[in-house]
Image 1 (tube, rainbow, N blue to C red):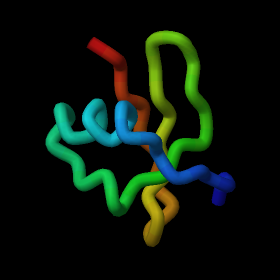
Image 2 (image 1 turned 90 degrees about the vertical axis):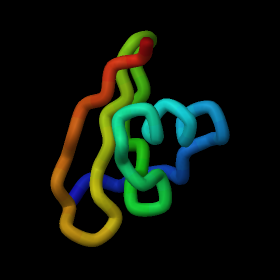
Image 3 (image 1 turned 180 degrees about the vertical axis):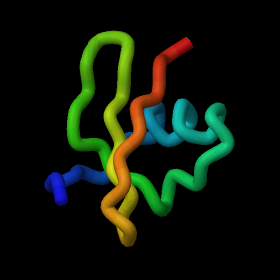
Image 4 (image 1 turned 90 degrees about the horizontal axis):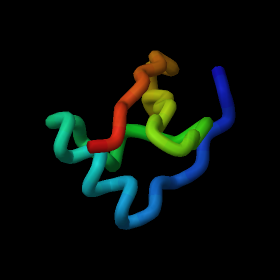
Amino acid sequence: MKNGKKPTKKQKVQIKTQELNPENWLIYKCNGDRLSLVHRFTGTTRKVFKE
């Protein structure tokens, strides 16, 4: 599993726009236009694009 960091307030808003619960997701990579997330419990990864 990748080590993740807690999302900031702006990142939490971005995660909510994708209909995900920000309490369950951690940020492991943050590019200019993309957030790479890892699930806190299952370890699955997901990429979210900024709008």
